[in-house]
Image 1: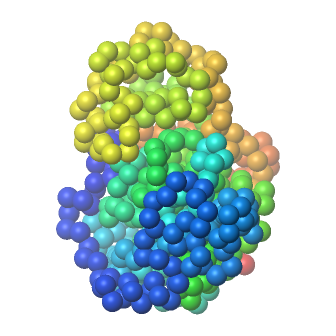
Image 2: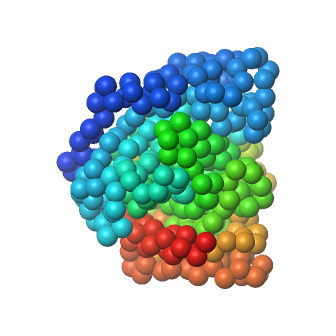
Length: 443
């Protein structure tokens, strides 16, 4: 990825003609009436019994202290559904083509909805999150489900259920091929409360599992019930989440869902041994290194003992501003100019050295995210990456493939050659759709 791509990752189509939405007010009212849920959820303190919309979902307990049939805190309970897009086949093809994507797998138009649902924080407390459910117009009545987990986003409005740009390429690609798509915004992005716990894989997985549950309820009420078969994919940060989600589903996280295939793209699967060293040896470009490390340290410091004061890690004047820059209300276009050009200029000498030899809280934070390839999937796995990626070097995918191979799993690394970070997904996405088609045909 060249040094300008981090600036444009989530505004690729924002500067092109937007696809016109065709969801009318009347259609929205009809859909919401059919669902029996409110058109919007008023924000209430996390864990408020009987929060808006809860009682509209049949079978959902609303009494104080009631337990959801899946897990505690009503995890996965659907709170609201908001139509956000209604596109015909040509609309979808134009949108994907605007990003340089192969449109040969586009078979249907689609309808998309923002789901609001119950989930939990990294500490296990009840909260809410949002995500995008995309359903094809046409195809089988009962739909297989793709879980698509997105890459790094700093501003909450870039999330799939809100932004109409990069975050929707993958959901629209898979839905137009004839599968339902559940694309979680993660915690603190989209319309969810609080800050995003960036690179906290565990909470991204709980939000993703709960999004699957909310999607199951919504799809049934929209008369497009799900088969229970899940095809997991994701890009960049979401590639890591996809591997961890696959592991959770394989381990029985929810009996309603059966993992069928895994196809993550450019995931940072090995922060300790691949991604972090690459930040310092030139394999990650400087702008991306500064952006990712600033985001990572400020988010992880709320979960692990990385520092007592930002001045321990960041030089002046950045120590005073860096945490506020990543409050989910600043765009990359605002963040990047406020930060220095290199990690050496960003970090104190002591912290610069510590990051090259991880110990203590830094090592614990890295290892909390790593290890998600150290299991034995019972489904086919393909890892997509590029030797030209200077955001998430291909060493991550190769280390992941080695972990799987050590457990008897052949997971080929599909190398997209000299493609940069974003182009890696644009090339991989249609290939993944075709591979999912092949896997499904073997059932």
